[in-house]
Length: 166
Image (tube, rainbow, N blue to C red; front, side, top):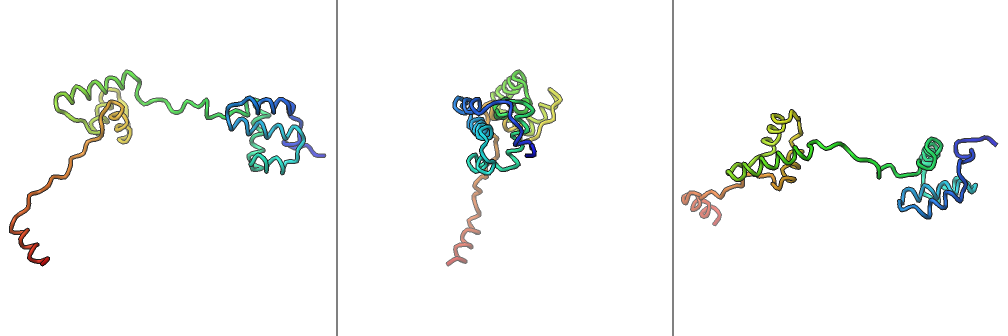
């Protein structure tokens, strides 16, 4: 029989995978452990794929990760992903919030563009306008827009409209 990535012996036995399946709190890790436990037991691949709902491509990817990383390859990598670094440090956020509040006390309300310009001047940061609204909200402010004012109409025009609609 020809050895392929899926038929070559695994580095752990089925009991190890079933133990990981029973003790894991991550649904992704449990599903992967189930896949490898069934694979280690010698179950036919189509049956394993049907039970675990993995595609053949995903199965090959899982086995490749397992062969490269061992049991650590079964973990869900999203849990350890810290995400993108923050644009502003906590000190920079506090300085911005202090400036916003001080100006608000004087009757000055900042727009997103004002925040964008201030960040460029103070820290040399080029920030998208959309991100500035996040900073405003974090400081306790909401984006401000001017509201439409009710215009008092011309009485002659109002009378003309009434006569046309009657």
